[in-house]
Image (cartoon, rainbow, N blue to C red; front, side):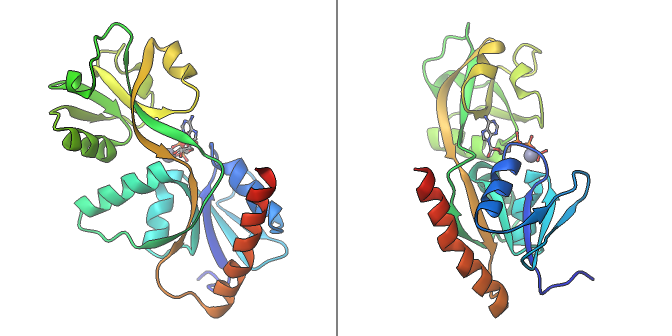
Length: 225
Ligand code: ATP
Ligand code: ZN
């Protein structure tokens, strides 16, 4: 069994949130020795273990109480909440801080040749996405009958491949869209990274450690403003 007295934090192993999450931990004084291939990393100066996983797994690890904290994008968090709600699973957690990195938007993008007059233009069409729950919620709110087609990768090539009429994907600059003959139309969700904590009481020592770190996180973010 693992040592439950150590604070467990889930972070993305390798991807867009990894470096910023590790930099933030280092900036608040957590010394880390990370070996690239390993799932677990230990702090050398605090009773903290990092669990390095795919970002998709982080909301569930926190909500199921497997880890104490997690750094995750709001897009992934919200999608997993909707997915769990559909399966009648609870999504308990606390958001401790909204962070200043991982900014992106989940947007509907369409081929340049498509005559798009708003989301109604997608009536009866297929839209490829990695976020079917967020997209279907958006369609439901707008009263549009369109089909979300789940793709875990290469979403932006789906229209050219004849798999979908449009896409709903994360955008930060729009360069990837442009390279694929697409352009952004509707933003359906704006996202940043957040730090979340599992629900329920932690041990006094763990909670004291978190309470010591939060003002430091605020300080690091203020210094960057
Ligand atoms: P994993 O292998 O961990 O599943 P991934 O391919 O799902 O990785 P990344 O592309 O590394 O994920 O993105 C992780 C998160 O970074 C996104 O869910 C989002 O919150 C954030 N992000 C910030 N900017 C972008 C962007 N331009 N494109 C995609 N994600 C972005
Ligand atoms: Zn992922």
